[in-house]
Amino acid sequence: MNANRPGFPLTAAALLALAAIWIAVTSLFIPAPAAADVEAVPREGFAAPDFTLTSLSGETVQLSALRGKVVFLNFWTSWCPPCKTEMPAIQQLSEQSPDVAVLAVNVSDQDRLEDAQLFLASNRINLDALLDSDGSVSRLYQVEALPTSFFIDKQGIIRKIVYGGPISSALLFAETSSLVEEP
Image: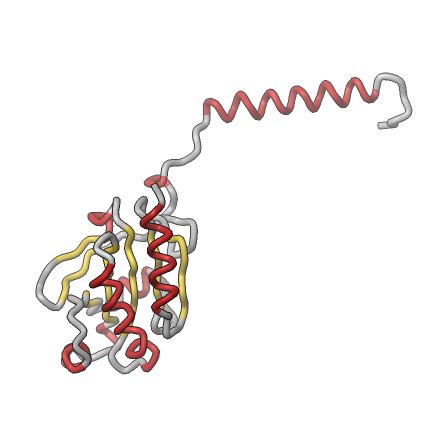
């Protein structure tokens, strides 16, 4: 098209106006997906994949049952030096932040249960660790480095992922506090 032809600006303006009207009308009839409809993948901005695991005390925990609460999800093993270093900060988060569900998942297919229990006891960590005995949850979350931590908001959406560690106490409290304060 030639912009110098008479009527070109009027035609272009009319087409732009029609396009804007079309976008506005279709957005009224096609709502944005709800958080529950967002595909569950272990990526920031997506719904956290659901799982059910058993804890050291025999309690069954399902992630989706914690909807409405901020969740800090951490994958660890007893032989991992950064995991050992960050565990006291995770313990502190659990003790001082009742609005945050702290899920410490022991990647048990890469760790011995006895070693995990000994590590927790000898370091006075009283978290009721969840046991990923067959590695299915760590595979579901595509955990390739230990530790790996996920900050999950009240709607079940992953807001931040931290690969490796140790994670600092300041980061733990800052990230979870900001999620707790959200409506």
